Amino acid sequence: MSPRFSIIVPVYNAERYLSECLRTIQAQTCQDFEVILVDDGSTDGTLRVLNIFREEDNRFQIFHQEHRGVSAARNVGLKHVNGEFVCFVDADDKIASTYIADLSQAIGVADSSMCGFKKIDSLSHEDCVIVPQNKIESLEENLSEFYAAGPTDWQRYLWNRMFRRSIIQENNLRFQEDIFYKEDGLFVVQYLCASNGLVGCVEKVLYYYYRNTTGAMSKTWLTFDEKIITNLFAHRLIIEELKCSHVSELVLTKAKGQAKAACNWIFQMMWQTKSFSLNRVKRIDGIMISILGIIDYLSWRSGQLLRLFR
Image (tube, rainbow, N blue to C red; front, side, top):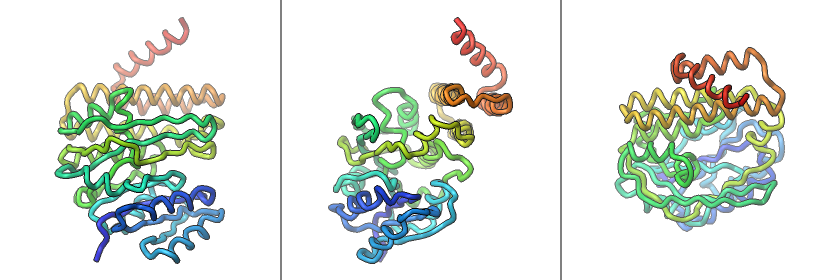
């Protein structure tokens, strides 16, 4: 008999954190689950840890691939899930003991549910708690909150959610393997647009997200990673998805605004890491023009430059 819940855990060189993460999964009050562990070509002691858990608990399954990134690892996981519901947990994070039980109870007639989370910075030791405060009752409301600034930040992540496997399968939803930043946000928007638009909310912290200094985002601020530009490709695909779903102009405007913010962020990283190059600027300009149109982009970019040199 298939388990009701599937948890996908992509793993890459996570020996330092992995055991703590997997113990919190084992400790769930709801035990009707499987864990799909996808080793993304780890070179440390990760495999030893994975084998320990597989040997002591047959609900833990291990799959291997050459190092291709987290999106490819999650896609391998999606090929092997058997549960009615799917969750994604990162290998260096932790979950509360009622993570599965509370998320599943919150779904009801909705096609997904989400919970609150705590962000923990391993360098500054500062914590940030974000908890959803209301139910989402339409796709339009869902997407509007997805792009709102401030307290609705609970909307933008993959790991504080539970998904129906049937929606993923029927719409052949997968992670874009050539996009390395915001690939999770793209998947969430594509899922929401394919779903009934309803989201159940758990108004408490169930997920503990650890921002580690060895993480991809931390490294980006030290040396510029060319892959960060794929963030803009994610925004472009999101906006295309929104247009196909015939959302309001308000939502489209918010989505374009977030693409502009991402563009500024990338330019800021290039400036900080002294990585400006004409080819990179041309590449970014081309992507942004495809998102905003040439007139809107040039108008916006010239305004940004004017503010910079005032």
